[in-house]
Length: 378
Image (cartoon, rainbow, N blue to C red; front, top):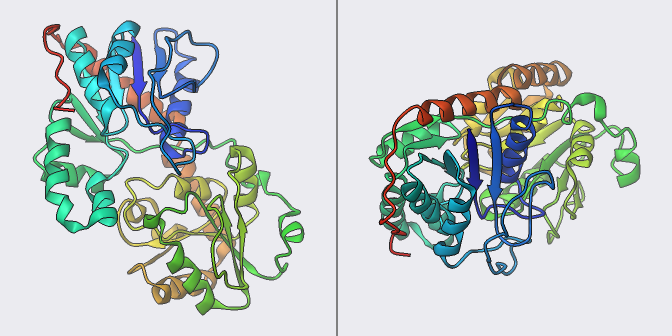
């Protein structure tokens, strides 16, 4: 069984989708009857072991930290067809998605759409709420052509069903439990960064995009004051930092990120529109309890035994949730968070679930329709 993943969400500093693809490739390499290939923009590749055609051309997106945006679905579809897959999965709602639908029809193979990004919410936050009905129509038109739609959380699955989509199934993501581990904590972190040894050290890691609500986190730290410290990792420069906030601007490799996170006391996460929230699971695997927002997928990931959820994304609510967390036994909370990650979010379990879904799809007959090469009007 040959599985091909395609997406434009792949760059040197990209996050959850790239992690997902690399986890799949690593674990599928150990399955004798499974082959895994990836088609991504530009010269990037996931590894030298797999022989793949040239990457479809895609110009870089300005100010996007390495992302590229393909303009024409035709070359992308040809690259997919040339691989002769048994299943095609796309991981973004843009040109590669329409190319995947076209290639699937031409080959007579099933197409899976993994709904990693909440496009209606993203468009509303950037352009205004008036865009949501139009974007929802677009999403329904695209994903209705899939043979299976995967949603990384139950919240997202419910949203897709409400849009009128069928064949929607919940498939959460995972974490590398060996790399993200409490044993890898950097014992020199506080000293090197000048963070007081007695401070209650919170960490946030990820892109500093609008939906992460970094200004809210900074205001919450102003309310918390001395005795609490926040470490922002990989977010870029931040203006008007409180004295109790430190920034590591540069992108951190996975092992270094895990060592930083494991050396902190808790994760502070302000995202309230997460489709999954991979950093939350990574923090729990490092033995950190979580302070987050009781909204989106984060509410599904963090049980009361593993952290505190603020009722709203406001500085006061987050500050109060942090105080409440540290009134509890933070060490015990972190131990329970690690156990929760081990029980529910192993990549081995996730990939086994995915392979089972792909095998089920391949058991059905899929007639090829070579004459159809529609790209959704793109």
